[in-house]
Image 1 (cartoon, rainbow, N blue to C red):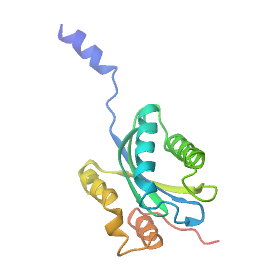
Image 2: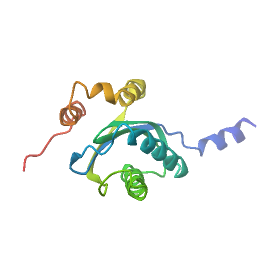
Image 3: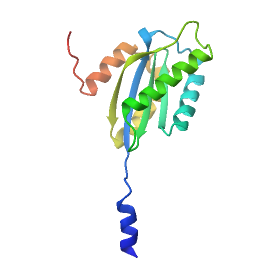
Image 4: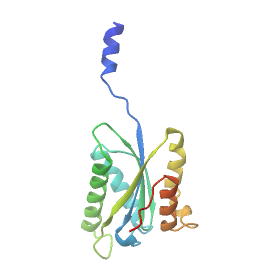
Amino acid sequence: MASALLSKTESMPYIKIYIHIVWATKNRQKFLTKEIRPQLFEHIKKNAKDKNIFLDTIGGWQDHIHCLISLDTSQSIANIINLIKGESSFWLNKNKLTNTKFSWQSEYFAVSISPKDIEKVRNYIKNQENHHKKKTFQQEYEDFLQKSGFTKVKD
């Protein structure tokens, strides 16, 4: 009996990989107004759920979005980003929520999050409005790259 139970659990992967992903609007235009953000975030949450993407937390500011996502065995960061960004820009344009054609910048950054830091990252994402009273997105971007150990290559 114990061996039957053991063999069933041996074949099941247990994975918990959290990724903090950030991307910006094209040319960092401030399209994501206080009125648009809640609608967009709810839409992205629903779309993620429909596509079996575990979106733990979403937040952002006028020109960028932060997401905390947990990957499963069949998902890649690039695939998740393409699904979320592509569908959300289509949705924004279809619903004419901006005065001009909306698109996301192709660049994004992503970093894995230690289980001990999950709550800290959730709070950081949820408090973007307060955070950006003190710091621009460019400053946040540079801090994020430095704290995460990324090295910028000079052209």
